[in-house]
Image 1: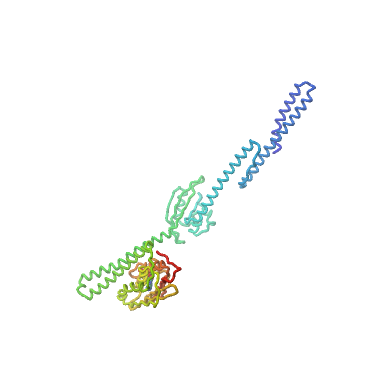
Image 2: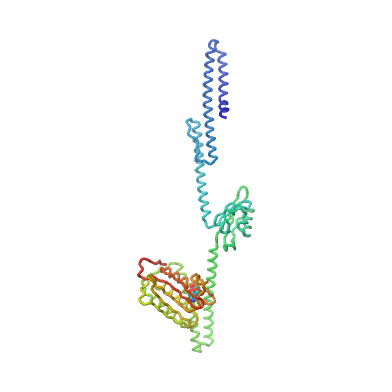
Length: 459
Ligand SMILES: Nc1ncnc2c1ncn2[C@@H]1O[C@H](COP(=O)(O)OP(=O)(O)O)[C@@H](O)[C@H]1O
Ligand SMILES: [Mg+2]
């Protein structure tokens, strides 16, 4: 190629020179002809040499250009044309190199954006799937793969139907691809026990409509809705029972029981018990909303344990007596003061003693005792009641959890959740030990004032 290009450039020069030379030789006088012919030959040789040199330079330049382009084609974005000393090719080199530089920068920005988008897709909690016009999965992120219990690598290029295995979702995706329809639907994936909200969006491409499926996990929200529904139905139920019995008691009194003093006193006792139950429910609801709002900070002050234990116990004593239960308190001698918000700590004792009363059949005993364990005071509320099964024991501190709904009577299942919240806010622990059928002991700890290094959090 080098030779052909070079001679192609040189031949016209040589031909023109030859013609001019013959012309000149024929018109000059004969004695001068050898000199003129020699001069013409020399000139012709010079022109040919210059033409060859220029041609060679151009060919060489083009070859370098081809080599650079080949490197670029192979992905070497550092390949550049070297600077040229001649004006015309220098301009070409500058334009070429600038163009490649710009192109490379663009590509780098795009690669960076792709990488960032990839990282976002990998780490968002929403599932994302892209399906092509033939219904094959072209992109699926980790969250989506997890939702449908498949591996990302095995889902790629499989049909959308194979991956999701949900009739409603498959139908919506198909109508999106076939008719370009957007859609939003709720999906229950039973095999994983999850609830999803799927948004389906058409992506118009030259080859057809692709489909973008975005999946939000709504399981937590569904759980919260269930909890809320259960809570409202629990509270309504728990309030309706004492209200109905209050109504019946008042009617009986009005219908003549008032005239029988001993029956009237019995009815009044029952009315009082029902009012106590309702008061307890309302107090627990208020306390829960206070603890959840976190708006009431603890006011921790050194307090004698008797100040925490006796007031609620004495308040509940009549209730215990009405239930035919013995109620005793044993506090070890010489217990140091504890760091507590008095009202909140009394609330804990009250909740535990109230439970003990509720879950201990008549004739039973409730004992409250406290001991010093290193830097903590352990307070225990022990009863001889129905006890808690091993299955229920780990769950009783959950909100709204009631082990035996039938026996739990008036109660929202909030008391222990509130107690745990208060104790933890004091920097303490709360737990229960129980043998079903023979009784339970609830423990909680409070820090003594001798602990200076640990400062409990407020809530
Ligand atoms: N002393 C106890 N004896 C037996 N079961 C108990 C005792 N205290 C709590 N429980 C169980 O724990 C559940 C949760 O208690 P709690 O949160 O106070 O709710 P509530 O008293 O409103 O039922 C109770 O419903 C009951 O099943
Ligand atoms: Mg309770």
